Length: 188
Image 1 (cartoon, helix red, strand yellow):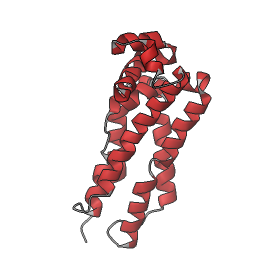
Image 2 (image 1 turned 30 degrees about the horizontal axis):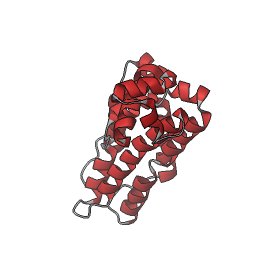
Image 3 (image 1 turned 90 degrees about the vertical axis):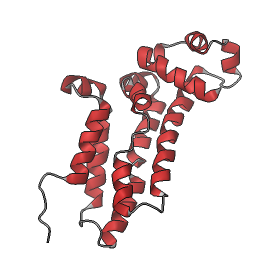
């Protein structure tokens, strides 16, 4: 039932931002507010647990890729960068980041913390690849800065709307630039 609550909360959040009510949620679920409150004590907790649900899905999916010993290091990195488990779920949050910042600053901070740490595991893998000589030697501090700052800009719905680009397509474009760069390298 909790997963259904999270998914319906995301649907409502996408359309109404944080202004949805628990009555709206109960109607979407075809249940009562009392049933919802048997799982959560407040609407704030529903929103917080929904955000945790989205990021935990992403973290779990990324961990499966990085833990797959049948993949080469380069395959893991490619899959990690192209892994967007459910862009709609993340997009539902992103579209109302300003709403979170204004009405739920602690949740906005939590989302930013997820963003700041989302690249840590792949950065470690990249550093391992550099050490093993499988990858080009790069400054991983700068790479992480580039990834974090770009991702934060992509979390700005106004930027996406102004640029007429979806979060999903912008993230894929960023990943392609990181993975394949600009200039083709000559084989030595």
